[in-house]
Image 1: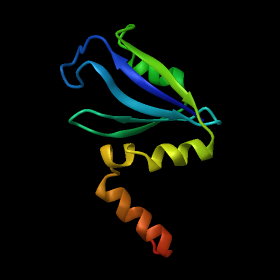
Image 2: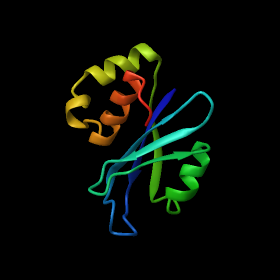
Image 3: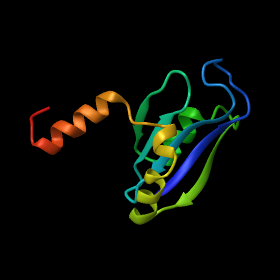
Image 4: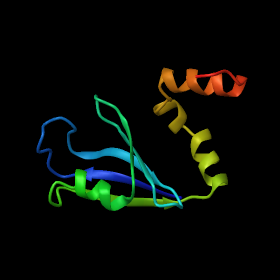
Length: 106
């Protein structure tokens, strides 16, 4: 797995702002998951990192910056750190995970 950020130098839409606006992970399969750190949060899944660049790159005004290669042990340490408090999972995700752990239907 590889972790990355989207860093934006200019906000064409006036919605996401500038600086680090999103974080993501590239799985070994090449599939990417991206979450926005802006007021209007969302999570999206992309076929590969090139799709992320194509959709969100805005002609070079947003860069994909790789921040780490991680194995599962490193990911657990990251999750156990202050990031868990800074970016808690949304309530709907917690409810979904709780149902899944109990073996309930979604």
